[in-house]
Length: 249
Image (cartoon, rainbow, N blue to C red; front, side, top):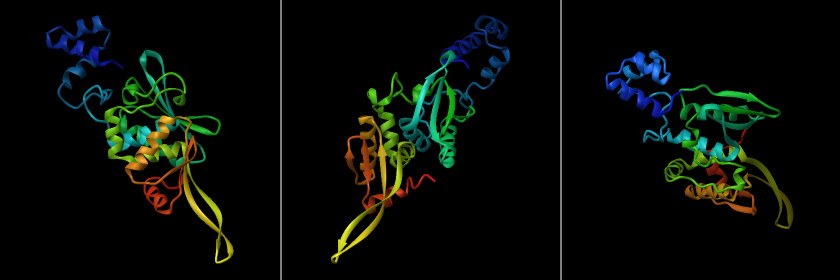
């Protein structure tokens, strides 16, 4: 994989009349690759082109979903030659969520394969690309809850367009839909009352604030039973959230 600077250097040399053989020897790029770059000039973007580096938007709906997954159970790790691995950890109890994570990654970066790496109790959905940090500028050393997590302006714009899909990623990572119950006295008789609610837990106050913001965009009422847990329990709020998330199984 060659970076944009190397491509630009090769293209400039070809435009200046330098032979493919000379460019190949000087830059260490095969003549077949050079011919491909030359012949495809002005046609569709190269598979490894980064939307952020080429002033394009990633597919907004899939990216909103993937951003939620990344902030919940995702990470980036650097490998050789400045290639990064995006890993989304998915509980093996919910195979549908593994499929959804893979589909979101493929939609955002369709030109490279996505791998499933089995671990104890979970599957990591993995994709390798030099430009993942461009799409996730929140990447940095240490756990997310120990550093500042802020969305770039372009990321906030995408979430504002698709808050439900962003919440789907967050809740499918660090949330759940559970059945709760309470006891009420009606007409002097104590009765059990069952109701569903959504819970979202995260140690990062910044990520929690992003979840709250997305819920506010959808006018979904929430409360904080404790500092690292958010609850959505009102009937109309749960009904609205069901349109975007629903049970994991």
